[in-house]
Image (tube, rainbow, N blue to C red; front, top):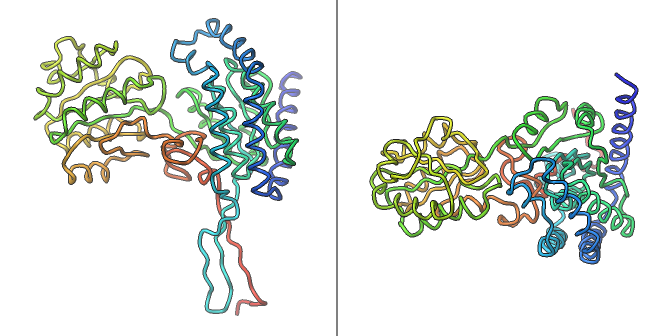
Length: 423
């Protein structure tokens, strides 16, 4: 290892050691202190709007040099309304019940031993994310509220914005009695820093990557600690033969078009053959009017003359932009098989007035969230009442779906006795 790499590893190790100590100190921090920290952070975000806007302007000015798309630049932008929303999210997290110390289950054994299952923090979280500066505040809020120290590694595209937000959260921590190292931002663009952190399982308890599939696969491959993640968001909307046509059009358009560059936007449309002739032309017209390119199989193209031929790969792709794949199926069974075969186990929706079809879809589609007569865009921590989210997991251990406060905790058993011994 070169001298430069030695220095970088030492920098990363020192930061992880400080986080480990901060995590231990957080065990003694009260819920009231954490609430005060979040509320003070929200106040400071409001007070520092001009400074935040200037930091964000520097990031936006550099965005073309990084080759960011229009959708990526939009995710990078901090408007006054978005800063207000970030502050509001901190207040919302402050109002949520503190999960730490919750007794999940308690029982008294025949010998009088009381056995409690108690919710506890994970410890130190290494959070790697790309160019969404609001995520800096969301992640800090969720991690510390759930008793964890967090090391934040944001994308270089949002470096100035993320640094300004992290400084605000650190200042709020020092004012409210929290350990200053509970929230730390990795202040180097060197990509090798990520590799160093991922090789410190003795100091870091879990890694959470949030961004493109390439980033997530790199973290998963290199991490020596557990990873909470999803690889892609190829989300489907299935329009059943018993669908209300107006509801179907409304849901598909919202799921695809409301915000395209996010993981819970619809990328694939599946339609039952019995209603393809009546519903597909309406959906196709609405999508085309919004600039969406339609890539359809042969049966769907019969009802969408302007559509392009779809390939097998199209049906597997997360576009994050103005393209959607379209498939016509002959049955509910075929729809479910298609979703499970081509989807990414993220978010899938069914539009139907048939309760039995809805129940079958919900039971058999293997995704972190299934929507019945609702847009895929609702798979979100805020929309589910979790407050801000740190990400969405398609894993089955240890968390699945939007990851809020409870998903950032584990549990331990605490036993109270009166001198019992085992015979």
